[in-house]
Length: 445
Image (tube, rainbow, N blue to C red):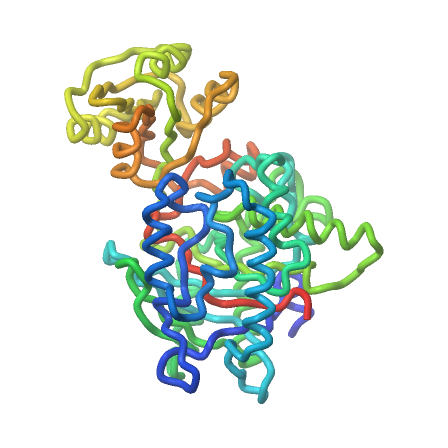
């Protein structure tokens, strides 16, 4: 069975979970699980509230590096503290025993996440083989990026993973299951059992439940489902081969984290390793056709830059035009109603000024926007997932660029034909819907 899964880049992981509240040495799930580190990157108050919510209990907050702190002076000390926390949790019995005595849980975790937007997303936590992943723009691998990867952003993440005793994932991979049958069917098979964990997520982020998928027959069902999807998958030029595989998994979130894991594995390969826990990365697999998987735009904020300068930069877009919006609410409505085929529009907000910008440049909005911003020397740009947060930042001496809605249809086909989209082209849901760190896996025993 393992060989059948390996064909599709999947390994059965050994998963560590904390003792959830209600068991001996109970850990409160809402304190243990923490949102992805690349969220709320301009909101230190959010992360302060996370610290307050997690206080007094083991928490994945101590195992991650929130990117709001990436520019702080204590990076090396923070990474050392992360590694020490990982070792302490391993040594002090934080993690629960699996079905085989004191071993981890060997299997996949089927999960259901209820978000604050009345959406129930289905997912499967699994390990993927980094030998089958390539983030380069012309990749024809089984696992591919859908957005551009910035090599300069990898070293801090690699420093965290290098020599880390544990990993805990916020990476989301997408499958292209048009019938939306594989993950729901796995759920039907496993939900007759009691869940491994179940509870509310902190700061009003919904709730989550997870079930262990440890039966060989269920693994076989999963492998057969992947084989069926692979048979219909686009390859991106020519027939599938060892160099040009079917495009089975698209990185929907956490691409730089997955690329960093790949970089660490390449270091081990260069040192002569052929197999090691670092060859694999723990991820959650979701289906792009799950109706609860909604694509949201990722907006841009130009820090310490005013309205007129930003408009001047964007005036270089083809067929540029500008109209006053009058207010934030009107601008948001215009952005959703004015965008149409054959062009794009962007909202601009800064210090109480609001405008709608239009361009004749068609396609994904980031395709025309990001290269233009990249050409401007000295711009400090951050990427913001929620409209409210962007508007807040636009009132603090910055200029926000609001992007139009994103259509997720055809993502696999587009990425297979043309390569990765510009970085930060879409978000899988709002910030509070992002993956929460929960499951762990040993990297260095």
